[in-house]
Image 1: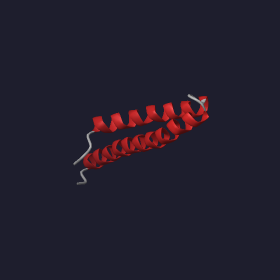
Image 2: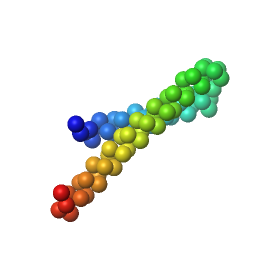
Image 3: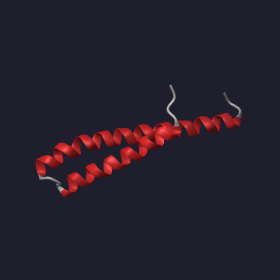
Image 4: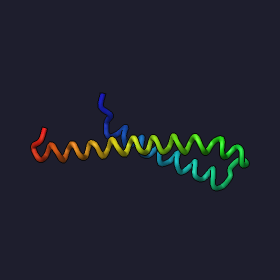
Length: 73
């Protein structure tokens, strides 16, 4: 089942937001050192995954549209 552009964009934006939150939690040491690492590290990896997934899906859709415009199947 193909992922729609809307959900890919939502994934990209959610991942970027989560990555920004994780970076802020780690840099600003929110909630103390141990709490910021416990919250920030998993959020960092999940944010990177979501952003990469959404970005790759949008890139793939753009490449497929470009190929279809040229007449390639």
